[in-house]
Image (cartoon, rainbow, N blue to C red):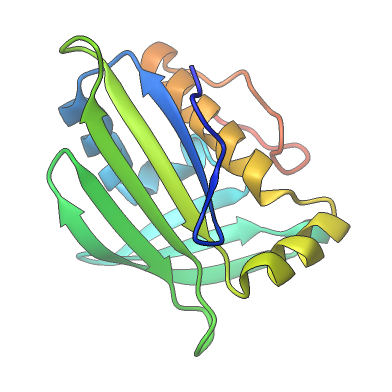
Length: 165
């Protein structure tokens, strides 16, 4: 169950509890090639080299955007940070924290996302029908679904026609 949807230092944060051990959830999330299985707008991820990935994101109006994403910090089973580097001075960052839940087979997952230009970029995205706070929550719901059941049924805040197979 989601416990919060707060903004931290002009970032968007959300939590969920997943009925899987932390090592399993971390391993799945640490391989960013799994992201298209639950992200509403990341449609492809390729490993370029260790810690560097190329994402294809479907943006507003069906525009496909290609980003290079670098893992900036990784602590086994507890923390992963990564950031985009599409243009000099403009980047988005993500932080995933993993902690044991109430029993050994539960994981608390916290995602914090910062968009380039903060509130200004969120306002522009909202005017185009993209709502980052809602997308973060929806992505965590889908992550929970894929980890617990192996399939995604939640299509909220995903690009039109998105298939999570």
